[in-house]
Each structure stands twice: as structure tokens, then as C-alpha cells.
Length: 364
Image 1 (cartoon, rainbow, N blue to C red):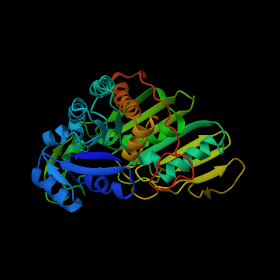
Image 2 (image 1 turned 120 degrees about the vertical axis):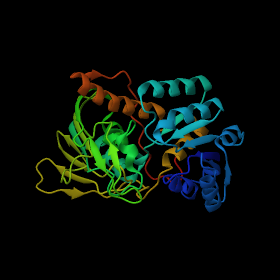
Image 3 (image 1 turned 180 degrees about the horizontal axis):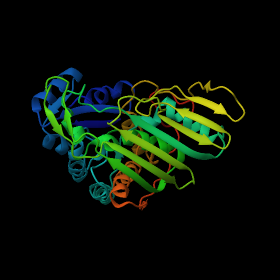
Image 4 (image 1 turned 135 degrees about the horizontal axis):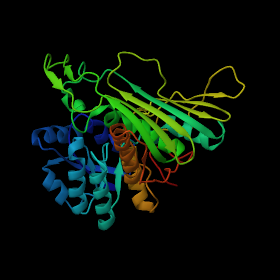
């Protein structure tokens, strides 16, 4: 059993703190937050110990630190955990830039520790079913892909939406990891990108509570379009935006020589998965082949814990997250400089989950 310490007790921590209910290999023993009262509230709710970040990192009992801090702190907290001799699993993105992301991976290698990173939704039943259909040849050779995250931003519903329009925010860094991780898991790594970006509304007005009426100055592009050349030869298009009022575009579609695959929302774990083969006049919904079809965040942490025990590579890896981070950074750079950007990183396509495993168990 792997003993887990959680750093960061915000909204997303709730589902992670429940993950031992799904995955017996995990035991969460402590949580920490800069706001100790918030950590104490979560600790009482989940019957674990609350402590300071420093106390958690110094605890020799803890094997893996789950880093749920704000993105601007991901690299700093991750490095501190590695220096304390812990393995690290971080919420997305791995870091705000590739310099910090590379430093994190290099420190992990020097310390003989592993880095994992969200999202782990690509391990859910929906995307694993898509992976099996592609690997089994149901759409032939993948030729192209499209991915669309279309919204009008967060200021109309989020209680504190300023971050989404500041450094480290924007639609690509906020939601792009879900879409790009799904695409890389299905089609393999990307070798080069180009892109275009813009800021449509330089100032946003918050219409949610409790900050109704406050103005937000937009610092990052809010409409981001990328073209992805995969190492396999497939070509992808991605749009992430906070600038549209409505759209009817699919989340993700994969186009092959023998058919088309409609991929579910990569920010979820389930379906539907739909397939239309060459010559067919209808779409067919495909029964899901794998478990974890409800909110199963923590699946990536459990996979890391199993991998540490067996010695195999873990699937939601730091290398995968770094590759996604480089793609996102390169799309913005390509727009700024008017060029294609050749990527320096390549990552292994993460292994699919085996069929027929007992729920909550990720190794034979």
C-alpha cells in the first residue's frame, strides 16, 4: 500500500481524497494547505491528519505527494517534494513553462524518484475503448484528428475567475491538457506545431458571485488554434477558446482510412463512443470495454503506486505531461513568431489498460 500526502485542499481535493475508496493500493494519511484551517476541515471530513506543507514533506511515512496547488506553484512544490525523497503526482499542467518542467524531470531523475501528472481521464473507460478500437484497426490508419473546446470563459459562473485570464491561465493551459493528452494517448507524440492566437475581449466583467461587477484585465490569449503534425503522420487541429457564445462542434474526432471515431469529452471518464465505418450510413455507439466510467480522478495516482510496486512504467507520466506542456507552449510561440515549431520532446505512447482487471487493481 502506498501512503499519500495531499498538498493543496481546494475544490479538486475532494475527489482525490476519496480515491482510496476505488483503489485499495492508496492510503491517504495527511493533507496540507497554506490555509491550515482549510486543511483541518478536509482532514476532519476524511479522517486523516492535517499539517503544514513542511511537516508533510518531512514525514518519512509518506511515499507519494499529490500536488493539488495552483498551477503557478506546481513546479516549486513538486521540486520540494522530490528533494524530500518523495514521488510526486501533480495536477495539470506540469509547470507553467518547459524550463520549469524540464528542471522538475531532471531533479526526479537525479533523486531516483518518479513524477506523474494529471489528467488521468485518458485512462477512463471512454478513452480506453477508443484506444482499443484504434489499436484493433476499426478505423484503419489514422489520417487526421480534430479537437474543440468551445466556451465563453468562466466569469459568469466561477466564484474567483481572475486566474483564467492571467499568466498560467487561458483556454489552452486550462483545458488543453485534457484534449492533448487524449490525442497523444490515441495517436502518439507530436513532432511539430504551428498556431494562431488572439485576445478578443481585453477586459472581462465578472457576473458570478461574490465578485459580481468586478473587472478582469486579460493577459493571455483567449482564442488559441493549433495545427499538430504527429510523428505517425496524422495531422490534427485543435481550438481552445473562451471567446465564443455557442458552438455545435464535436469534442474530438479521429479520422482513419476505414472510418471515423467520435471520442467523448476528454474531461470525463465515460462515453459515449461512436463509430462510423467506411460505407456505413449510420453511427454506432460502441459498448465501453473498460471500467472507470464515472469520476475516477486518482486513477493516475493508483497507476503510479502499482507501477512503483511492479517496476513497470506508469501511464500518466511526467514525460507525457512535459510533451503536452511543450505542445501548448509551442502553439503560442508559433503564433508570436509566425512559424512552425519543431518539438524537442518525444514521449512513449502510454500503454493501454489491460482488459478484464478486477476493479481497483491495475496490475496482474
